[in-house]
Amino acid sequence: MIIDLIKIKVKIEKYFIYLYFYPILVQAMNEEESEEKIPRAFMMRVDDFNRESEAIFNEFEAIKEKYEKGEDVMNDLKQFRSKRPGIFALIDDLYHKEVEFEDKLERAQIDEDKKQKMFEFKQRFAELADEIDLLVLGELGLGR
Image (cartoon, rainbow, N blue to C red; front, side, top):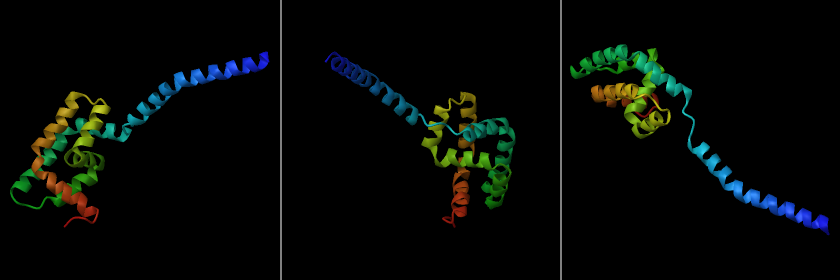
C-alpha cells in the first residue's frame, strides 16, 4: 500500500512538473519557429551590396540615363544580373517584395547605414523598377 502511494505521489509530481514546464517549452518552441532564420546568403548579399555600392550606383546611373533617353535597357539589366546575380535578386526584392524585405532587414539586425544605402538606391532608381520586373517575369515566361 505504501508503495502504491509512493507511485501515485511520483505520478502526481510528474504531472505537476509537466503542467508547469509544458507551456514554457511550447512557448520557447513557438518563438524559435516564428523567428525564422535569415538565410546567410541574404546577409552576404546585403554586405556585398554595401561593399560594391559605388560601382552598383555607377552602373545603374548609366542604365538610368539610357532609359531616360528612351533606349531599351533590358540587355544592360541582363548583363548586370549575369555579373552580380545575388545583388540583382536583392534589388528585385527591394522593389517587389518590400514588406518581406524590410522584415528580413529588421530580423537580421542590419546596420542603419547599410539599410540607408539600399533605400537610397531604391529611391534613386525607382523608374527602373518596372524594367527589372519585366526582366524577371520574362524569364518566368510571364512577361512580354
